[in-house]
Structure formats: structure tokens, C-alpha cells
Image (tube, rainbow, N blue to C red; front, side, top):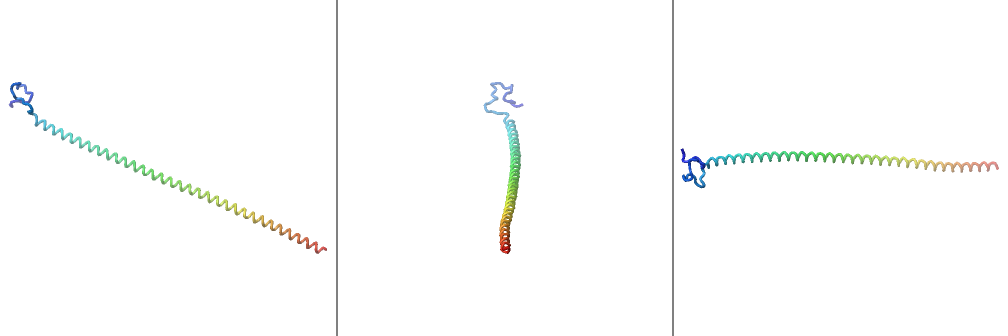
Length: 143
């Protein structure tokens, strides 16, 4: 049996000088416990780092997926806006073409009416002159 088992050995009294300041009988057990505790802390820290990395990767993936979705939406909106502009331009072009067609039709109609009016006036004037000449001719022949 050793001289003493621990610092609190009841067999050793105050005068036995078995306990000295700084003496550590449990140093090997404590060192072993501290090493185990250090390994456990290291393992926990590594797990925490892995968990943090996994969370960061998941957050990054979510961010990039959301960013990609927003980019796709922006492209779709841009395409829709371009299509809308093309449709508006097509409608305006069709409207303008219709206005030009109406103007040309009206212009042609007015020109035709003017020609007919001039022709009618000319023919009426000509007929009147011919009729007057005919009357003069008949009057001359009669006298």
C-alpha cells in the first residue's frame, strides 16, 4: 500500500508531512482527462465548422438560385416589353397606313369630282356655244 492514496487521505494527519504545496498526485489522470477534453472540443469545433460550411453552401446555393430566378424573370419581362413595343409599332403602322389609304382615296375622289365638274362645265359651255352658233346659223339662213 502506498504511503498515501490522495491529498485527502484520512490516514495522514496534519503532522505527517505527506501533503506538500504544488504536489499533484492526480496529474496523469488530469492530463489524460484534459487531452480527452481537448480532443472532444476539437471534434466539436470541427463539426461546428463543417456545419457552418454546409449552412454557408446551402445559403449560397439558395442565393444563386434566387439570383438566377430573378435574372430569368428580368429576361422574360424584357422580352414581353419588346413584344409589346413591336405590337404597338405594328398597330401604329397599320393605323398610319389606313390613314394614308383613306387620304389617297379621298384625294382621288376629289380629283375625279373636280375633273368631272370641269368637264361638265366645259361641255356645258361648249354645248352652249355650239347651240348659240347653231342658232346664229339658222337665223342667218332664214334671213
